[in-house]
Length: 294
Image (tube, rainbow, N blue to C red; front, side, top):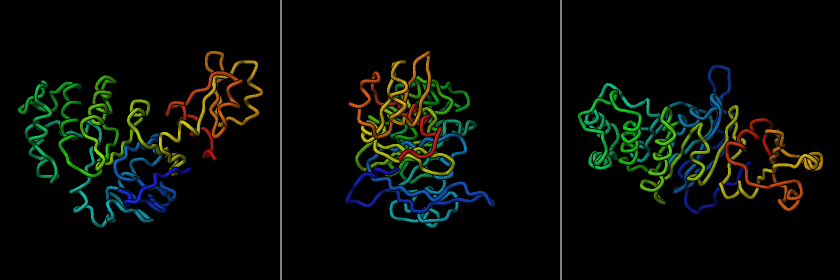
């Protein structure tokens, strides 16, 4: 299911027939997608669905079949040069806990040509994170602040975040994403995020991709999601009539039936009960329960 953004400029990322095998097992089954510049993409799927394998292919960290281009280059062949304009940061647990903050910044300066140590230090001003502090001694909140400082100090055209707030409290997760949106994103930067807490990033996404068992079952702009999918809290006496319209998902909650519909006019659904747009997590559950929506 595709609703790819139309743009005259070449996409930041392009994949055609992307496949990956581990031994005889095919992990990715021929993915096709484009990611234009200046967009915020969410890549969502269960553990083992193929999210990290997809990211590794885009970052040139694994071989693959098919065609992949990142900033016009083959990432597996041009990984070193691409890293000048691409940044990848995994979850907060990936920060080397045995280092001091200043040592981490020195390491990043050597690793990434577009990491600005002065900017990173500036982002930490006014926080409790000190340059001589051991990372392993920092609280969760301090870890979130440090992680954010690292992310925002990298001037990259494509920033890939793989479960960036894993292990952090909800307060720190929300602050992380909001600061990233308000202080980092520009029209020239593209952000690709994988996360399990999909509802927490829904407010900032321009596009969403759902991956299940190595296949993209949804690739759509967020504004299209709200016009295509509807959720109805169906009154008990209307369940049979609503079911006749073919919901893609139905669930009974506290004695009430919630149904998700794909492409059904909201005027037709209104007589059955309250009509809303499903949250991304509700839509994710609905599409994971069946074959791809048509």
